[in-house]
Length: 127
Image 1 (cartoon, rainbow, N blue to C red):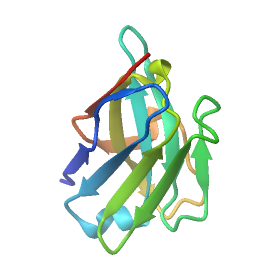
Image 2 (image 1 turned 120 degrees about the vertical axis):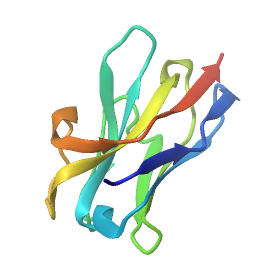
Image 3 (image 1 turned 180 degrees about the horizontal axis):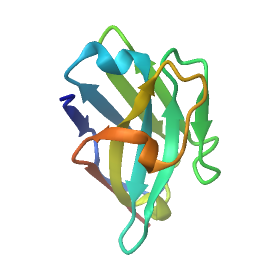
């Protein structure tokens, strides 16, 4: 069972930056796409950003494109999400997820394709 842990959330003001980190317990994730999802209060869980196993494909939701950057370090089993120019609408619990199928070339955005999830980290952006 792969353990996934998110860190780096917090309370910031609009325009500030935060860096989230996703750490996994096994090298298994090095062959999988890793994505970040978020759930805002009263809303569905939405895809935010994802990176495939070798970093060749990165995908962002329209709402964060140009502000967020996803990266991975397979030597450390970590995936980071750099979030710049944060807005109040970015307020949510952010979850890291590991895709079921290894060595995929394209990042998939549906949560059903991910089978290991972290507990989430809260990001709150005040106006």
